[in-house]
Image 1 (tube, rainbow, N blue to C red):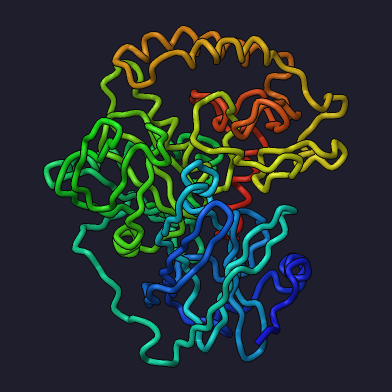
Image 2 (image 1 turned 45 degrees about the vertical axis):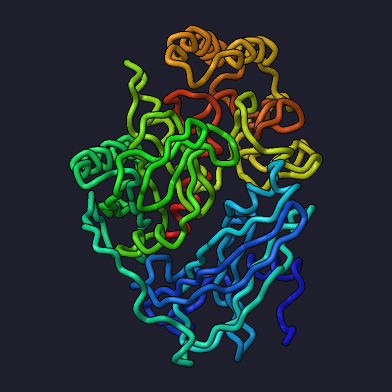
Length: 472
């Protein structure tokens, strides 16, 4: 049955007449959790259903059912089969699509477990997954019909691990707020007091940062006390292995400081104990690191043996949440990553804070640029890059790394602080892991430098737009 509109027409449809549907017409106040397998290699991908679950009350917006955010590498869409109406959509990204940009993906196949959350339909739906093509247009890859009226289709009793839950603060009903759940991995039973302190500390760090500070009353924050058998998480490069509840580990894609996990089912079972729109996982370990993928989760380390470097944990927490919550891209370009050509050349990225500057007159953040600001916008890139090369020669895992790095970083901060266009919005070359050809909105931002600097105006607007999507 091929009644689904062509991809380009769907994009127009999303931005047009169906920006808000009556939730009660199509859905009941429950969550449909769709678990699936995502497999392939560098140039191919396939999907297969694993399990469908009925979870708790729907935590997302009941008015903004069709997303106009245009974020994410993928988009899930839900159609009512009887009427062919598009009744729900949301963008997201995956570990799989990041893995596809690594050297390993050119040599082997891998399978990742993933979850989609949509409102529980009243009757049969067609759920589809679309992905952006080379021109950033969503093209359908997979489709499945799910009928809640068939008793054997949906498991009504999903796993509910016996972890304690609590709230840091609650400002209203989940459907009208952004609900964040904070989990922990690598916290043993003896570490639970530390988890509680960590959760409150990092939550305070985020809500001391604009625009979260000003929008605090539009959030609920929950915690789930996930207990691991061991303290700490695996560091495969050091042959250190731990038994943890959520399966997080360093060395994702061969990058020593990238923390992700592949035990998605355990993660979702734990998070599902409370209503949630966004997941954060605190890591009870001391190596600098973290990770964040749009509409998946964010991770951050919570221990350090380097005196005076505790602030870096706060930086990582907020930075990674910028990725996972608002789809912000990394604006830095000199740090080591495992990706090979993460962005396509001469193609405008979907991230709201990175541009290929293909057309100066249609810059995506043009409304923030003052008249007379040159595009591209000059900055002291050669001097900054020279210091970055010196910093790159240091062993990032050495005991004296922070002591040797700090003088270099201090000089880089001075360059950014005193740049001719500091504090202004323009198009500064160097972003998205590329020194040339990609541009960021400001000379400095929480998504660019390792510092506690604020989000630039473009990133801040991107965050507020997502907050609005959930709450208005």
